Image 1 (tube, helix red, strand yellow):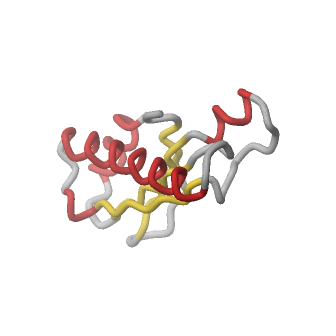
Image 2 (cartoon, rainbow, N blue to C red):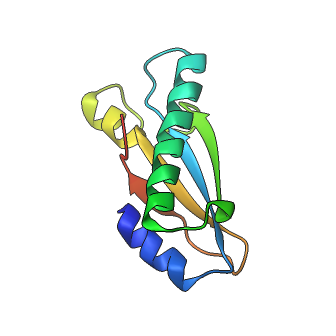
Length: 103
């Protein structure tokens, strides 16, 4: 998924990307904010290793504050462990999701 996003980002040098790290509901607020940041940083490092200019990438952690799936089971938790890759600048784009990049 990150390779696909990188390929699209290469086509749009005028557009930066914000990586938003997210977690499932388990764990404390502080733990999940740190985990979300590690997840976003891992995606950032991968995109940089592919060749994306680091100056085009910002990262934030949403922790467990923005769940995609409601529920309290493994299926919901798996859906909520993700990075959201959001194009910023340039033309308004559609959010792309990298999916589960790291745990």
